[in-house]
Amino acid sequence: MTVCPIAIAVGCKKCPAFSVCPLKTTLGDIKKDEPPAAGPNGKKPPGAARK
Image 1 (tube, rainbow, N blue to C red):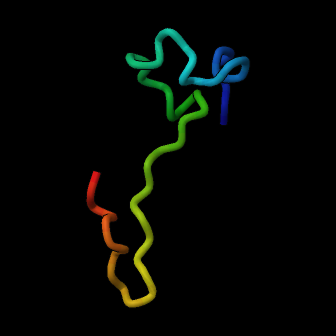
Image 2: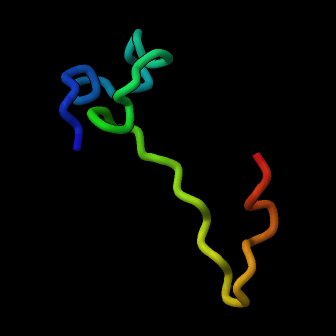
Image 3: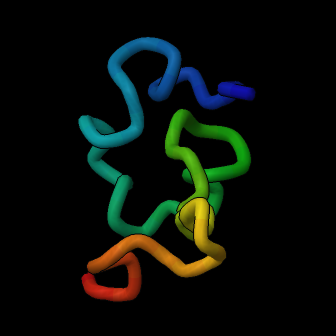
């Protein structure tokens, strides 16, 4: 749900307050990171835990 007027107009990443905004994932257009799904054999895909 995008409620922030800046996120609607240009997107969260172009907002001047992006780095300090606590509501990026609540009001803006940024998606929360979800853990990768397990593969067919029940194990995580290679590189899933790396960042």
